Image (cartoon, rainbow, N blue to C red):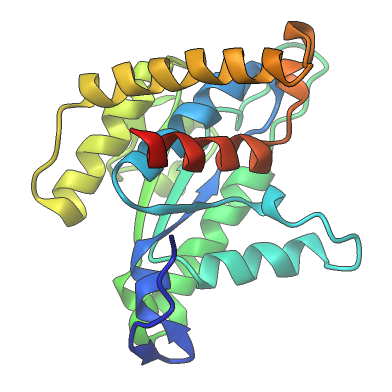
Length: 217
């Protein structure tokens, strides 16, 4: 539960800002298990993941929503693994590096508590991003090779290094994630979903299932 009783700082509740994580990553079907493992890991570690899909109000401009989310989060996780086209005829995904730029700009230029923002950049391969975004050369980019267990490890290690100082091993989080997905499968079937439709369940709905699961364990 998000506590709203914290001290107010620059019109942002500290409890919210200091625990909130902006998630900037692909949302396509091929990335589905990756995004679910990211969201689960963030929640497991006691933080609040925020994604642009949380709001679907057609009257709210997407870019304004993203800026608002970035400003509300101390942490940002940005996956650039779709920055390069996968096959001939594809376009590179520019949304992810663009949103990373917004987050970095907020940290550097906005001032106040935003200077405390921390950013994790993920990629598929360790040095692949340099061909498309050379400005990040020398940055500590974490690679995951499109493997959910590796993204769990990268996020766990980053939070421990930057904020928590200690924490459970990433394999425990990974086993818990697999327990959750198994329980989620049973719950979705019981509620009338067909297995072929699982990838169509909205991310905010999956996040609510995660919250219920954490309350029970």
